[in-house]
Image 1 (cartoon, one colour):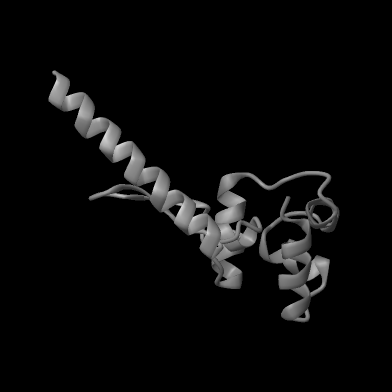
Image 2: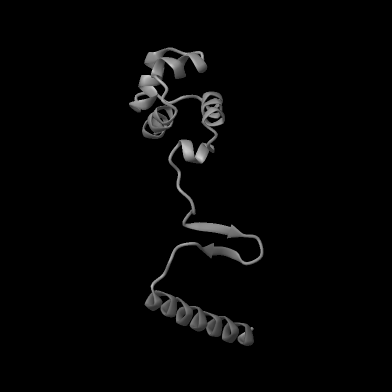
Length: 109
């Protein structure tokens, strides 16, 4: 899971696997296993690696931002992806129909 990112970070610092292993107090073979996605480091080790390379845990594990949706405290879910103009109009029309349907249902109560 972190293999590619770890290898790139290590090489960007011109470090060998042995040097990184020494820093993390582990064996060179352990670093090799991490980089080849054979084994994964525990949370404590992930934090130490992220701190050393000055990256976030998200960056270390290859998680990309922005997320597809983000919770907005005031208005529910906010869509964070780009829509085509046609998709945006469709969603606006659908929302308008839904709101009219809800308003009509409330009047019947």
